[in-house]
Length: 240
Image (cartoon, rainbow, N blue to C red; front, side, top):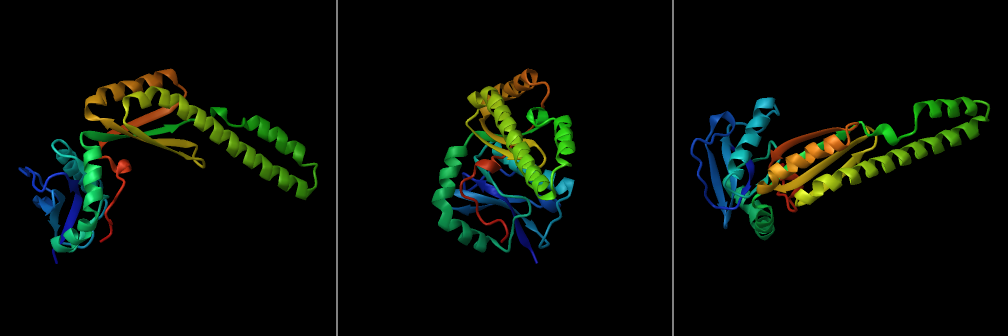
């Protein structure tokens, strides 16, 4: 049974698909819906494994489309039975999709990951001394003190991470359209997604280099450009 693998939504009912191939070497084509279209290719199976090659191919199709179109990317392995169902699902959200396409036209996403942010956290030696002193306390008191200490460490870590975020944003925000930051407390990792206009890519990369130079103790990685996954406000169902 042939299915449709859907890569994303573009701002035109048709596009130049010369030499653009999808999974299993199938032609990539448009499924028009009003003045936009879903980008799809035929798939002779119901699922597809996330191998490095298949994930790269998904991103390659989106990257090729972004050179000429505004693109709303769908997640890897978005599969729908046929074009009719795809149109039916897209039609009610057409206005919202068109609004996102207008807003994201000419913009791309960069992903940042910041580690080694533990410098502002409680020193291990301090924690060990506190732990040794607590051994003489009754069990209930030790438990409450340990719980309070874990809360203090977490709060101190979050405060340190937010200070680092503010410092990095001073470098990066002026050359970006928008940004979304998040903190993974357990792994002490800051992540960020930046929406950048294509004409500002060089300036953004230079800002990342400048941020690294100003904060050499941090490990700041930057990947991209990607389709703007993090800035789509309306996302069609991705498990059809």
